Image (cartoon, rainbow, N blue to C red):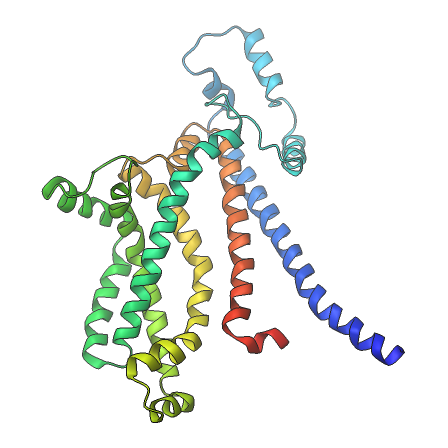
Length: 319
């Protein structure tokens, strides 16, 4: 009985330990992001009370009451501890400028940003996989697309957005220049955000495919009469995906950061414009809420990536 119990305990430990490590790491990431953002925002110049009052003329008594109501008279460590306590209870606080809850302000904008990020992500994955599969191991195609990818990596998203606007909106009039109504309004901002991601992913995936195409099992598949495209899609692509999947975490961070700029270029509603306005107005609760949401998104994406690793490579399930 003891001989059976010991392996069972070890097996549970092998499953539970990585889960606990991942949960602990996730909590540290969220705490670190919130702490750094809190410290950074309070070290920047500007007085929150002056921004709250704006151009209005108030008496010293009203000014003192505003300071007390928002807890700005408390020491910074006390404000930090109070904020962490509210976050643990699911309260992100009240916006100084919008005069509504931070959760409500973010909730009103998050849909538009999610649409833009998803469209950019799907576009980037489809195009990069297609380019990598069709050009891997083919000298001339590889040379041509490597040059194009180098240009794509070098182009800032905002510059690509302005160029697309000039050609396809102001010049040809095919797509709307501003706004977020309808699928057609997603095309240009999605392309602008996807360009550097496609350029990076296709390069990494092509390198992986070219290494995999030299493996013995690929030669075996070819000897069975499988077509070249079939070998690439059914055998080589699966083995070459792991390094590309690793980049997915970076892609999420990049797309979230890119949305801040692209939403302003195309005058779209979204988290990006909300964040820019909050930073400009020193609206600390909104900025902290956005940082927390972005960090949480990063953590969730990385957990999903871990699960995707296991689905792509069964050898990792026993590791």
